[in-house]
Image 1: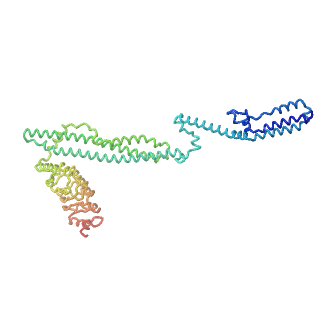
Image 2: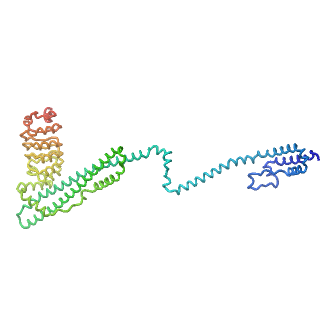
Amino acid sequence: MTATETNSPLVENASEGASFQGLEAGDLHDLPGSETPAGEQGEKPDPEPPEASRGDVALVGEEETSAAAAEPEASSASEAVTAERQKPAAGIPADRRRVRKRVLPLVVAVFLFLFAAAGYHRYLRHAPPEAESEVSPKEATVSPSPAADAEGPPSERENTASVFGLESRLRRIEALRFRLEAKRIELERLQADYAYGVLELEEEVLPLLREESGTASERRLRERSVELLLLDIQRRLAYRDSLSGALAAVEQASQELLFLKRRALLERTLENLFTAIDIPARFPEIDRVLDATEQLLARPPADEPLRRMPPLEPIRKSLLEKAKSADFSLERKRDLTIAAEICAGDLARASELSTLTLRAARCLAESPAVDLFLPGVRRMRPEAAAKLAEWPGDWLSLNGVRVLPPEIAKALAGWKGRRLSLNGLVELREDAARELISWPGEELELMGLRSATSLEILFSWESRGKTLHVPAAIRAALPSGGNPPGGETTAAKAAGG
């Protein structure tokens, strides 16, 4: 067998195999008996070499001599077969493999990402609250958040909180001290009212203690009235003493707040010099004192606890001693009667009073009168003058007063009216004049003066735009010609205008 004949079947079979391999994958589906399972349609295995190729290999093994001669032709035929096999590899199955190689990593990456996200979400749901806010010192130092950068370093934030905390407490201290001062004034006024009530009751009970005449029924009735008045005095004394304790508590609270304020200001000044000073450590103590002060201010004065009631017997003995020197003249009895009429709302006989009793002064201060003319009053106690100064009228005339003690002058200087007439004064004492210059009124009448003693003191009051009415002869006798330091008097300006 020649080489040509030997190779002809090989070439012929190779061409047949090449023509078989040239069929595309889609063409096989059209052939009978070529159904492919549904799960195996995606990718086709590489076709196996045809049987002719395997026969050729056996033939070459049997005829070694002829194979050596036909080696060039077989090599060229094999290259042709390889080329034919590579043609279908560039078709659709190869594209699908490339797409699969690209898509598969993406699918795996997405799956891993979703798995990691689900695990992290499960960890956050079951993690303790402290774990969420924990930040390592390294992270806080190396990569601070923008909010932390905006607020500043922790030391600056703590310093800012300390400054604002101290300032708010200092403002609260000032507000509480102002309220304590208002409460102190209220308690002093209430205490003065109780004390005035005691004096007024004593003024009423003294004539009853001195009186011994009358029938048995009249004496029993008088004794019953005395007992009731003594009980009222006892009760008012107890309230007066209890308010003393409340005043002491208010004063102590005010002093304690003042101490806390001064200490806080001093420590704030020295804070930059001494590192041992810790201002926020004082805040609990300050807050405790502030809360206690709030409770003290919230307690009404009427809720102050009553101290032990004073015994009645010492009160009775004291009043019996006062009754021995008390005035029980007809004029005194008439004044008491007029005072009762004034308290009943009848002021018709108010000008007939010779002594301004405590009861009359209280009722006159509560009256709606615009002007009060009391020309008959020659005597009054400082307590009665102070009570009369509470009257909110316009013109007060006390022309019956001949001597003005400094205590009475001080009480009258507290009156808020416009015009005060003291034309009954013949001489003005220096200490009384110094009290009168603080009176806030507009016109002062002293037309009864016969001496210029201490009159120059009142010129300082007149120089503030006030009007001082004095006799022209007394004014002209002064070295300055009767003019105040600021120039002409108001009366002189009015006369010249």
